[in-house]
Length: 204
Image: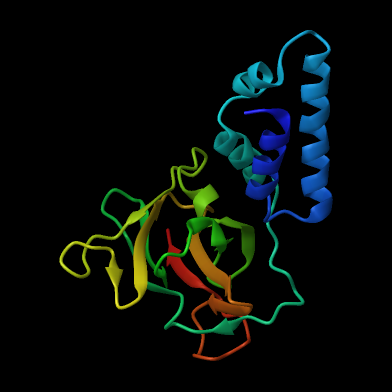
C-alpha cells in the first residue's frame, strides 16, 4: 500500500468524525509519512511499519468523544432499533440484548452510556468501538437464540452487549441510528416519541 492508498483508506474509516477532526488526523499522518520518506524509507515500508489500518482508525476514534447532534430529531421506533432485554448476570456483569436492522454495521450505531436511573450521560461512542473495550471489559457478540441459531430474525440482527458496570450505580444505555436519512432511537420511551427517554438502566 502506498501513501495515497493509505490516506484514502484512513479517510474512509474516519468518516464518523467531524471534517475538522478528520483533516487534523489525516494531516498528522501525511506529515509522519513525509518525514519518514526523508530518511530513505519507501512509502510501502512506512505504511507497513505503521501497522493495521483498522487498529489505527480504531485508536483514533475511541479517543475522540462522539456526541449526539442536538439538531437531529430522533424518533423512538422499537421496530427498527431496540434494547429487548437486560439483566445483571450472576458473575456481576451486565447484559443488554440489542436489536438493529439486519446488515447494519456496529459502527453505524451510536450508544450513549448513562450513569444513573435519571439517564445522566457518561459518554457516547459507536458500538464497534465499545466492543473489546479493555477499560470496561465490554464485548458485543451475536445473540444466538433466534431462528434456530441464527442471530437474524424478521429483518433484524440481535447482539448481546456484556460489560462491567460503568459507574458506581451501575450502567444504562441509549441507542441511536441514522439510516436512509431517517433518525431512530431506542431510549425507553413511547413509540414515535421524539423526546429522549432516560434509557435502559441496570443498577448495581
